[in-house]
Image (tube, rainbow, N blue to C red; front, top):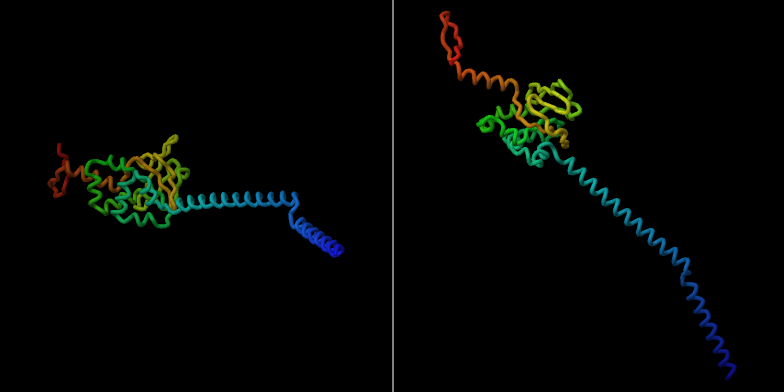
Length: 233
């Protein structure tokens, strides 16, 4: 009986010993634990860097898309200082033209510039779509001309058909009689140069002068039948 108990005891010890060895083999060593932790930390850092990089790329892409999507009309409208110009463009339908691919260069009068026109002029233009279109297209040039392209004495043909003249003195750039107060506002389909006055086509200015002169003159027949103009004091 004692012999059988001894044998059973030895067998149990052997079983416990085997179980203990198995548990020891399955548990990682301290070195393995450190290596695993380092790998997890490295992986987490890489994930963070990747997420930050993705966020920066997305922000840059969104900024780029915002800039590209703003055409000349949208840019002028967004600025808030061209309400009269945008209204005039909408009235004549030129807003659709300036929303096309282009490119265009627009010398854009501010709201203050339109207010400087003689009393009643703006109202008269708004009621005469043809003349309004003539004035507006005289402010537009086909092609993209940055400020660096505008040198003294340069003449550019406008969409209206007549020429504008660029004068450069020191740091001041003038378009006909208007000063460029803010150059190089870039849009997706061209560039805007802000000017402080509304410029008129030479032909329209001449017609205006002729009209003013005719108001102060009288006509009469000469002895040979010709019509002559006599100034009225």
